[in-house]
Length: 262
Image (cartoon, rainbow, N blue to C red; front, side, top):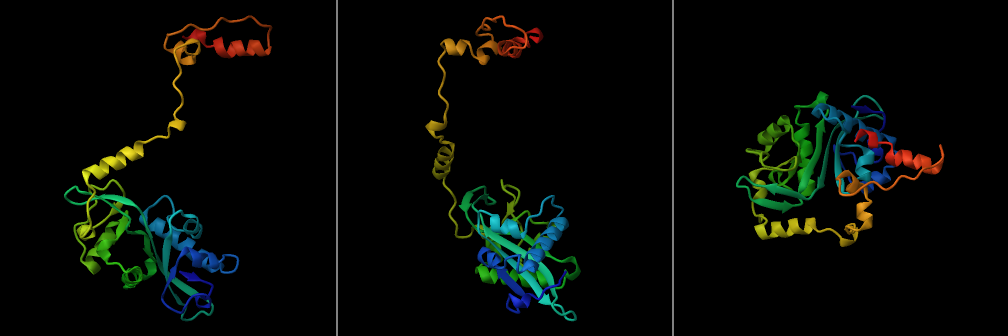
């Protein structure tokens, strides 16, 4: 994908650029419009290739996201056109708190590095670009391929991981999330005990007493309530006569006009 901008003016003349939120902020679109354009267009192409209804990656989404995300952009200068760059692909990662189950149904609470979006332009696929981009990310993050979680990987992505990293038997059947991990992911990790699980569950169910509405007593207010009328525990209040099209007349129509359908 060609962009009429020479990225070497702002990035080192290297094939892959690591972009965190701070660097993206400095690449203000008013001055470096090509950065936002490259990210947004690759994000749209990625969503289309995966058959998604919404775009996962855009310049604004990375800046506005609550969690820190890192984007890796693969590019090179155009061989024949001056002031033109060719953008090859993107890889977006971030850390998320996940509750995962291994193959023996043990529960783990982890905050791993997650693959959130991965795309190589269709014109340059199957040329080693995806492998180069993925390796670069793993080196920068000091991670092995089996230690990351992947958000909704496609079959092609799973085949990619098996071909280049020898990862087989992805654990996805039991997960309550859309993230997939491999057996290697759980090596050296401690599962959550039943006691810890119950404590977490009880803690999540705690409600601030100040937020609970007071229980109404079954006094006069209760008998006059709409609930008492609907459930037959009280009678309708007496209807006062009023002149036509007066506030009281409109209130009577509102309160008593539906009696005919009961």
